[in-house]
Image (cartoon, rainbow, N blue to C red; front, side):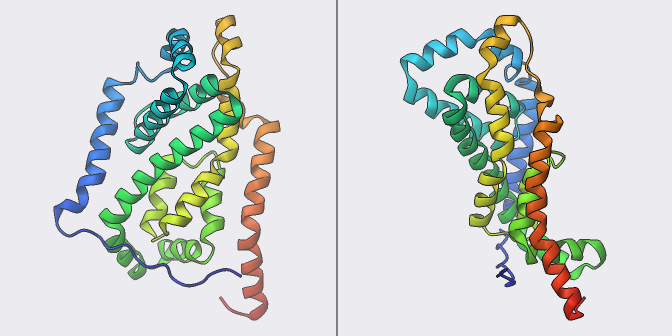
Length: 249
């Protein structure tokens, strides 16, 4: 049974202080794009691969901790290099462990953005969306009726930017627990794919080539992901069909 209760709205901070978290994230994103573009790149990974492997072999636990912390900072402050970080996770730790570490880092970083938006604008924006009409109101009502399905769809569809998928749930009052759950498991397919590509970087480096980052859009990869999207859509379709049978709008 789908929970149709309206989630409690987050309380927004009063005054200019509520804008501080997102302002910090925005400033960090701009500075990162300017200062770190060349340091968080595939070329930088290729140039430092031997040093990274040596450090990992000598300090495995520390490497894991530093890697996850760095991933959280990259995602949480919208710095360039999230894809490279995912590849690095596969390169350093293999597919299984790399996927886990990547998912923990990505989910934690996404949660930072979510909380910044939720407690910065949540109550005010939710009130405005409640008062609005047309498409905006319909979108919000749809998400509230089938939150889990909508959130999974946003994570599974490759065309939805990760940053957008972090902000939208905050603006409609999604709970923190549901956001974390759907983010962690919703990013799993793409995370496995890019971690798997990263795990094979040793051979790519040896050939002097670059990884195929467009692999997620190849039919044999995109097909199963779209299948998962279809499964996430089914509860929404069934709910609408039941409403039509009952004659409700």
